[in-house]
Image 1 (cartoon, rainbow, N blue to C red):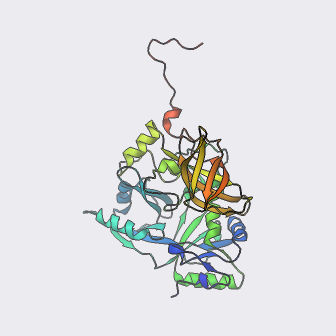
Image 2: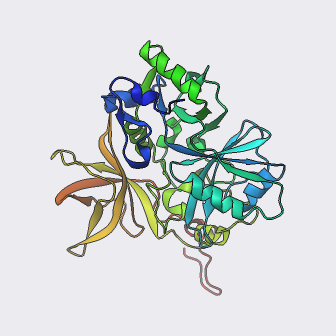
Length: 370
């Protein structure tokens, strides 16, 4: 069975690196964005697949990761994070369960490391872990109806559209752009990918590439493991407590940091969306440095983590910057020696963390203000 069914379609241009097995675009990434967001196209995604079977699978995963999973019902979807002892994000897990198997979607290239870690943590529990990457394809869509007839093994529904039970949103946006991120990801047999390709050739179905999907992700403020994270990332910095952390569940590795930062402190960095001045036509790329003016000097305050050209907004990017940077300050991106102005759209406010919500009590003996 070929694993390149959709890459064989007319106009397909392969992605790079770990994304080379899927199409970056089919000739018109901007038009493909519109097709996706209007629910008229599907996209093949570069994903790893890990399965966990056995009667202890959900309670065991619950004990290891940030989300409540012990009560996950068949057909439900959740997102959870595997953290290191200091609360840094090591893996992002997109989890669905069919009553017998917990299906975990990871970023491409991350499944082997996740499976290795999970196997080390089995001890005497009744669980079996397998890396199933390469045994099936993963298809994404904004309208689940497009997946009909593809014999999906399981469907994961992204919880980013709302605040998950037990989570909290740091964003103060009256209308969160993630409300339009109605993404589902389905694990489908390779034979279904051939069927899908035939539907595209006969114009029964439309298809989009990863560039289009990524541009919509950036516009939705949706963090992506490996792109928007580094070895220091904690969930608070990316507003990931919104979908992937349950603040009232039992103990798990890294929980102390999650609770301490949320209840007593502030994350050291914060994610922003950057509206980029595209008048010079200089493309911004992931890894570009972000600068701010401080006391008459230009200081590096962060880096671009994901960049895209949106079909309505033009050039935009996600960046992780120091928490202390004022939210109203215009920033400068330096890309290949070019300086590009960028305005912030606040995702994680400067005061993120519960401490700012706690009223300050007057000192004993102090007179109340009139």
